[in-house]
Image (cartoon, rainbow, N blue to C red; front, side, top):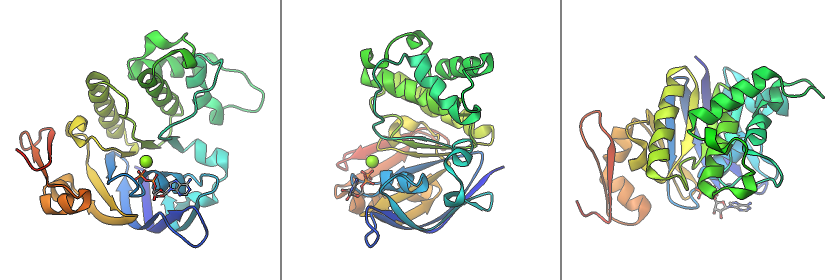
Length: 262
Ligand code: ADP
Ligand code: MG
């Protein structure tokens, strides 16, 4: 099983400031980790820092199976780690299947076209997210939620052992969001490491194995969801509104009561 280890990891937008700092955690394959926290708490910056995003400075370390991620070149990283940005650009003139096939790039040699194997992987990925019907549509002629599914499929077709997702469920309807978290749980069961930011813990069912709570750019808590969510006082102080989180049953879905009403 792959293992991703963060040691005092920090990231920010200049050499002497951080937008997220002090992240130390160990996450193993076979698990889904949620990154939660208010707007501006550093969730996206954390993922950008892991990916050495242009213009993002980082310190501390993130290792994948003892190998420093920042010592990998772009292609070495892309065959092991896939990343879905919060708002990826929508390229004009590409169909959904062509967009999904971009996820196969790191696995191809220079100048080779899409093999039948690549096309099969891309079609499988579209099917996994329930978007087969979009295959031949142009991505600038489909909805925001439909584009989200296509981008998710592109990430899945990269077939990596680590998947980083920045608000993957945003702009998805209830059905597709539920399907998404079920799919992420299933992928995790195959040994993949999933790290996903989200605001909608109630849409995740019981998909999370671990939760990282960020507040004002600091890592405030990391651990079992029970320990992070069920401490209502902690969430209330972080979100600056009375918060309660319950579970529908001991293994059941999370239910969120923002504003404190129950
Ligand atoms: P979140 O994803 O949790 O909403 P972000 O990681 O996007 O938060 O932002 C964390 C902090 O970094 C915020 O204060 C935000 O204003 C700042 N920030 C985000 N993007 C940039 C950027 N490109 N340049 C400078 N500061 C940024
Ligand atoms: Mg964000």
